[in-house]
Amino acid sequence: MERIAWNQYFMAQSHLLSFRSTCTRLTVGATIVRDKRIIAGGYNGSIAGGVHCIDEGCYVIDNHCVRTIHAEMNALLQCAKFGVPTENAEMYVTHFPCLQCCKAIIQAGIKTVYYANDYKNHPYAIELFEQAGVRVEQVFFHPQSLDGLSQQKRDFVQMLLTILQESGLEDNHLIALQEQADMLFTRK
Ligand SMILES: [Zn+2]
Ligand SMILES: [Zn+2]
Image (cartoon, rainbow, N blue to C red):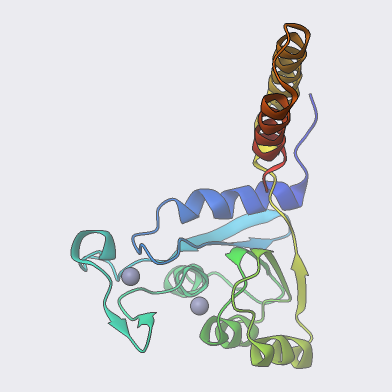
């Protein structure tokens, strides 16, 4: 059994958190890590006790949903609430942080931001991260790394495709099936 790499482990945690998001516009998760330990996590959602976008619809002003607190902010506020230092910590986030979150991340002393997906990467946010000496690195998340049977599943599908080929399925159908299989197993 292969051990999951640290960056995949923390990125998986952020993706797991994103499933808790209550805003339908974008589901984001963020994990704050210090010394290879998870110290906080957040997802984008309403304030505690507030109504949820998934129930009431988004509250959109200027093309932004103003109801939610962003995942990065929620993770940082969790640290504030419980008095956990964020200085020199790292953040793993499913999407490139917006400008507001970027500033909060810098000001909280986060030193490295790992993000999985590009999302309107604001040039000013990139500039601010650079100025502040915050390292920003894209880390693709591979869900397959969480599935211990991933290779077996892949081999099994490949075997079925070979059987289909040998039993005379037309090439154009085979190619389409192969493409679907490749998409399933290499999806980021
Ligand atoms: Zn919303
Ligand atoms: Zn944000």
